[in-house]
Image 1 (cartoon, rainbow, N blue to C red):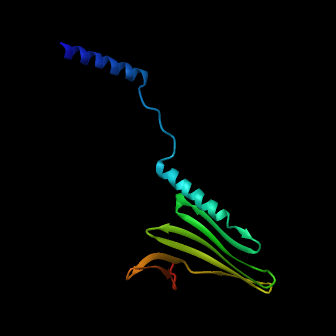
Image 2: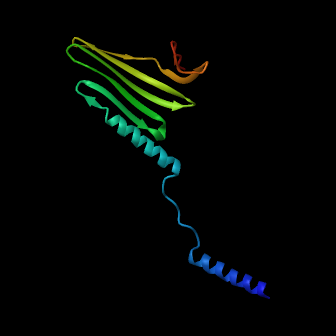
Length: 143
């Protein structure tokens, strides 16, 4: 008899609980993965932002963690004598970095821009020594 009363009381409590709060509210916040990605992106951009312009020398880093991309600018010089700048876009996927880079060279007022071939940068190991393998496409085929 005690068992029958407690189950009936429990059924009444669950009905009233469902009646009071039928469903949980939806969570519209970012997932933990997206929050971590955003914080790492902000940290990379904050560090890169502090390296921007020092007189005629440039070193800048911009990170987009959500899209696995980065932009690196490096260079400097004097416009009347010699300038050298590298502007590169990086895409990180499949354990490697795909790099698209452009070089600007200025010499005594003459300016030249070079588009480098696409490169892949792959971490590697040889007899316990860490190294980086850079693959450059010499011939490019497009269909």
